[in-house]
Amino acid sequence: MRTLVIGATGYVGRSIVRRLHQLGQEVTGLARRSEARERLAQAGAATVDGDVTEPASVIPHLGAFDAIIYTAQTDIPTERRAVEALVGALKWSGKRFVYTSGTAVLAQRADGDWTEESFAEDDPFERSAYAGARCDTEDLVRAAAADGLLSNVVRPPMIWGHGRCPPLSALHGSARSGAVCYLGRGLGAYSSVHVDDLAEIFALILEKGVPGALYHAVSGETNWRSLAEEVARLRGLPTRSVGYEEARELFGPFVAHVVFAHNSRTRCPRTRADLGWSPSPDRLDIFAEMGHPAFMAIAGASSDRYDFIGADPTTST
Image 1 (cartoon, rainbow, N blue to C red):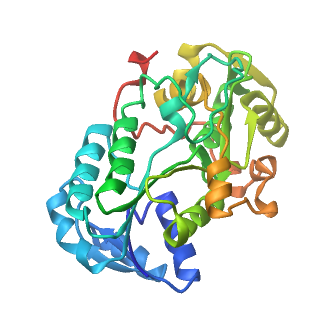
Image 2: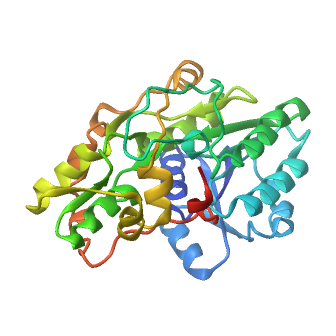
């Protein structure tokens, strides 16, 4: 199978490239710059030139591939335009197209408290005011299955592994305040998955994804206060509860608002049933990840500010 990965140099994209290469598949990444081409070559991937923010530069390449995986992160309107153009060009091709969304679309604001709702793939929910517009793109992709496209959506939760995860980095970075901080009572939770287990879902979709299906990816969940307490133990510091405004200063607007101020609790029965997926038993302990050298090297002078979606979350509910 020949697969084009759009967003191949990103955190998730690199993991997908690595997994498909391990499976002996022919993998190509979309690249704008020479540095990206070099990184992809080191990962065993070929490259084609193009810029997802200019879909016309990508569409001529699509005919050479059996599958296209979209993992690029841009602002929501740009993403919608790109995906709409790609799906339009691929209709009736019989190719596979996989779009990466995220569970921020269903996040529920609780400012550090826990909420009981947990959502499977096709459960109804009230869209998040901040990221809920991505649901329109999800719907567009899923509907294309009726037009001759093997289309799927993957909706990951918080992704961690190999010393990467912006919320976990933000907890470490909050040590600059003299304590490891959490918002409110710190009882809110996001479901989570290791990036390599997530990559396996993409590989399985290429093999047997049901056209039009949406797939979650979940291997566990933990409240933020418990994670902050583990960081504090590792760093020899106390913990401290902070209010919303201080959380914005410590963690950055995206992490403070969309992550720590919200719950995003999900389940993945369809992923397990359709794809036969389950997370690796060696990749379940997020607490063990907290002491990764990359996290421990984070200086108390700054935190990982992760504001990639491109809107101001402070205007959301």
